[in-house]
Length: 559
Image 1 (cartoon, helix red, strand yellow):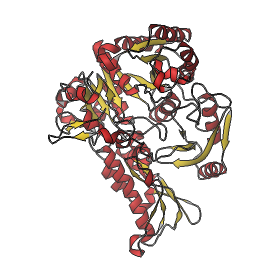
Image 2 (spheres, rainbow, N blue to C red; image 1 turned 60 degrees about the horizontal axis):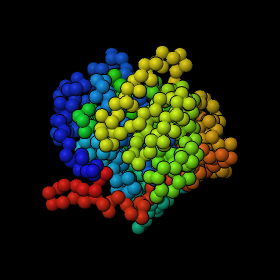
Image 3 (tube, helix red, strand yellow; image 1 turned 180 degrees about the horizontal axis):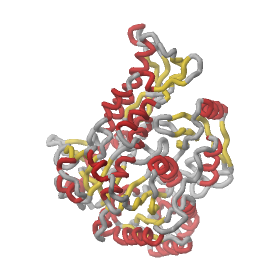
Image 4 (tube, rainbow, N blue to C red; image 1 turned 90 degrees about the vertical axis):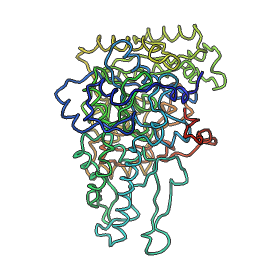
């Protein structure tokens, strides 16, 4: 079989003007970036405001494993399959980050015959959104340090600067730095550090902002530091939010591309769900709902992270009401959760499958706690045996959820027709239910209580331990008036617990919260558990070792 990039490079793409026309978007509302990608104009929002919303479908997954589950692949394949059955569906995905593209993943545009294209552009610089976010973030940092250098009128305590610089690349050497060295002319020396761009508050703000005015307001609300009296200092006090907005003006516009089968796809915003809120932009999702009968979107990592944050943060702020969850799993991942090493996953193992399927069960139960119907999508591999498939089918039937054996990687939209039909049928059967979607906790609760609810209801922990640092940080956040915000938990993606080695459905554990950080501009409190870091490192053999470009400009090694 061809590699992902070979399939993508062989795709018969249509000009982006033609893709836009499928959605009734005129050329006047496009800002093309070459022939095959474009930004969408601001005027589209006012032109479509009167339209009713389509149905919102969230694609999420069980806890990821080293074998991979194919969540983005299923998302793309489902959109292609919707086209096959005559449904008007719009795909709304996150933008890949350069960090994992050159680090552990090698790309994030789907796989096989279920990809978004132009794949190389999407995985690399795309339309420059990531660079704009990086520049806006680092402008604020530069203005803050310059303020301290030029007399420090706000009396900022340089020991209590909270806002970090960022870079869209995995680089562990930048986690902790000393800046301002080399004498008086080079600034005030202090400890600093970098986050990866997708973990930055500016990224979250771009994803959650409703328009330019809201964007500017949120940027102004960023808590950057405390002063010498212990009072908060916000970005608006530094006077640079207008300049930051100018840098982000075009980045705020969603990007239009296409699938391999020429279906429209919006790709916009890209935070990780293990260290940030993990969803694409509100603006892209809302526009997709106006332009299509169905909007298919994706949240990062497993449902304990991405889906929970999608529901409790994004849907709450944007007033979204999801109609269905597609929960992606693989039989080999279920066996991995049952204790089988990665090297033995191709062999039939009913005992391990029976043991590991509790992970799938827990994720289904968790989604039902938000009162959203679930369809399970098994991303099928040729090594899955009939007995294993039948076991999963029977298990899902006993839980009262539809299950589809999905083959979009090998067959594109054709391999997802059964999934598309079951999703549409599930939505039709449940759309009049009075007991509809709702978040799992009210925001008016104290911060610690909201964390306790997530730990017990979603992670299935016995409770939460707070370090003295976390206790202090939470007390301070509540003390300056930000108790009523949702929480955004930074946690390992590999387990329902905060320990990546605890697979399946962990029991008899407590979540440890080591710190908390206020993201007032984004509108949530970040809760740090375990050893999660907001600047990843590179693995021993980064994907960058496989990526190359020949003399004709042809790229290889992306996948």
